[in-house]
Image (cartoon, rainbow, N blue to C red):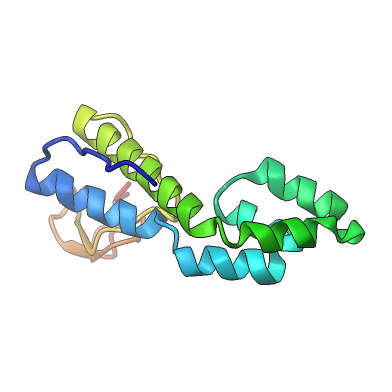
Length: 139
């Protein structure tokens, strides 16, 4: 049984940053179980939870068949492992956000909806590097 994760008090902006990053990086229990059941012999469920060392070990020994048997047994433990992973992720994100440390991104960096050019003041779509109006760098 997992323990409840106590998150520090956050402002609305910090909570928004937390929710956005958590939803992008959190893992799904059903996906973990299905990966262990169908691709577990190759270690896919370990790669999914960023346990790359075990994933490589499974890849090395997949031809023996032993990794398939172990993965079949592990599929019953995957929901708890995914919950632990998500709890550790939530704690790391909330700590980083509340202390002002850089937020560890697990997925692709989030792009803002629009950027205001410092040179001419026009609004540009998010993700562009240069202003379409004056050509100034937006980075």
